[in-house]
Image (cartoon, rainbow, N blue to C red; front, side):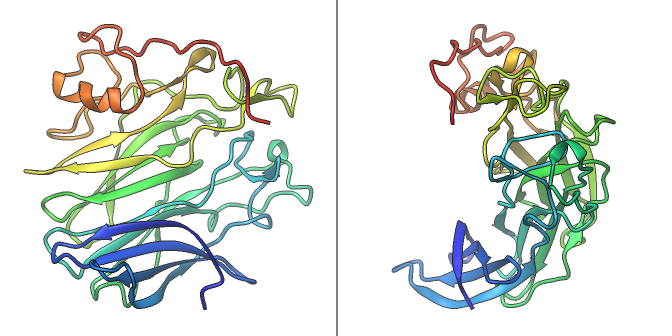
Length: 305
């Protein structure tokens, strides 16, 4: 039964059929669900069909400022993910999201600075137009992985980009990782770090800064709600979108290296002209086309409450 829904994300299959994934908040456990809607009217055609129960919420993760958060952090991090459609098979869909199924429970007071968290990227797939879904698969990586977004490339290979704390033994700083499916429909993946610099949301931030723990001064309340990734037509190429908190707390595009053959490098040295349009779309002001470095933004006049 649909109770309270949000984070609705659509996907258009190769045959033109439209599917919408959303979070369904019920009186017991939250769940991801999918409906098929009419391309002409937007009205429901079939569903909702349950993808999976989410392992999330206050019993499963720390809380601060009425936000679900991670270890040593106060930035909000919802279980938002997305649905994507395989261009080689109109009946083949995937839903990607993060949750806490492999994370130890927080202390009774839900304090983030007394918690150890291990958020994972989760994926489930359907081969029958979203009517039934596979058992969810969790990425077995250390530390927190969050804000994932997935897309199929032209070869039907699922590619998932996400923020990733496995690169910091303290589980505080994060980079950006690209996961590439080993074969169509396999739900097994290789991973590659795309960032050449990590972002630290736990201290020293200019934007939306608060100090809840003196060991972590000026932690940020907000780093965004999601990342995105898009497939480039004509081959096995993807363009990631990733934002981070740089030194001094400037929001910036983390320096990304090439994520595979043909993948675009965004925000680092030697970025090609074809990437500059994407960089500008992400809000960067290019100070030098040769380096594609963002100009630091001016000091804010206000912060969020």
